[in-house]
Length: 317
Image (cartoon, rainbow, N blue to C red; front, side, top):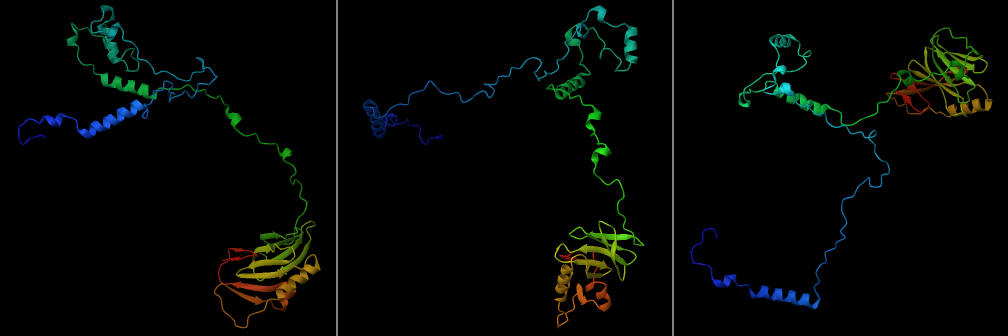
């Protein structure tokens, strides 16, 4: 208790061990004598928990291969920095005047030696903080590791361009010319077989060519400028999509195998116009008339929005 109620000394029985603790101690002593309780033996072969990672390293570091660089050491003070230097280290009036007029970078020393009678008359050094700061910068910015600088020539970094004659084969001679369009050709497309070529121009014509010979096989007059042409990727169907303004024409080219052309017509003739006419805000399907049918046009899709790309899978609006 910090503040006891009475100052009466504690009773003697408070210093006598209790009977319960005496019984516990006697049981432990009896167990040790009978050999039931064995003490742990201290092993002398305790393994060191620490080990050297490079213990089995066979490479011996030599002085040249050591990459560590020690920190720069300060220059030891000389006689001119003493508070009582010898007379030969004290500057004359002319030397002191020349030192004051010189630029700080041109001076040989950063101070002028002065003489004092005793050490207690030496004043505080005015450049002490500046020199300590520069010393800290030397320790902070000095290199700590030696690295081998790679000598690389700037010309070796530039790739060597091959000669044009080594890049052959490539077309060096004009072989085929497709003549016929009278204006700017906007789009071309090659069919999956690679035998036929379709081209659309600003002269409002669609021309079908034979790729190998350059012969114009068919000329189809359109209602406007042909903006895009695309062949059907299915080789079993001779179908061509042509975008003119906001209309997309499905055209049977009638080139090559007649069986393919007839199967294409059967596929397009299977289109049945629904009885209940439902107006759509995107596209409207119509069957071509007789004059358009003679030119190969089978179905016309009228799109009510500006088309960006035509495809046989989707119409991108």
